[in-house]
Length: 251
Image (cartoon, rainbow, N blue to C red; front, side):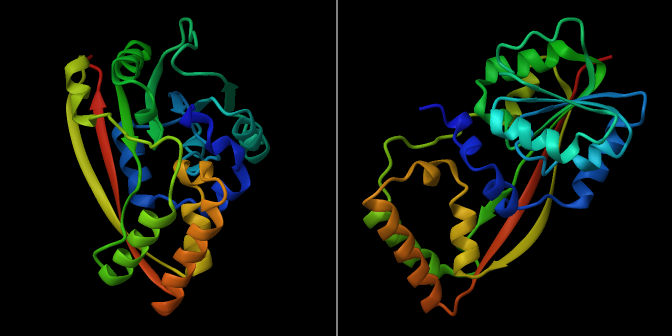
């Protein structure tokens, strides 16, 4: 099973329920990269474009590479009116960029799906001297604000959540410095989400393992999660951290 294309099954749901990033994140990336209409930018695996429009609006020469056919079509429909928008439906790991190089390459919760030695080496090779690599995602803490509810949901997982394959992110972002990058920096921002039972179930249904969950487990799992949240007042609080990893190719 290739988890990289799992999300491509549900583009509309994915776009609606995945958490958004904060404005401060994009301001940081745009400032560090000094983005303008003269700069060339590559986004790896944009999905449905939760991290696309702020970069497009700088007027840069934007290119995306997206493995999913449905995601690619979704992106074309969503951003095709921008004259500086371009997307290719291809696998970053094997795609030949020819002589094309970039001032900024960025990934929103995507680069970790690529083996480290391929991801960092290839990005380094297609970055211009002085170019920036930006990697970010959302890390969610569902325990701190509602520990009792968290434990009840954990019991539902233990009883009903059985999938054929588990996902495990093995990438260590700090290792980027082992591939020639310099000026490695980390920064993060905090956000809080409050969801009801239906919203939470819609959100977790966009996780890769949850997409692959089959009957008879699926119905019992979601029924159990819903009951746990309803019993807790139909509310779950999620504390999000949005980490940003930046690195630069030497001049």
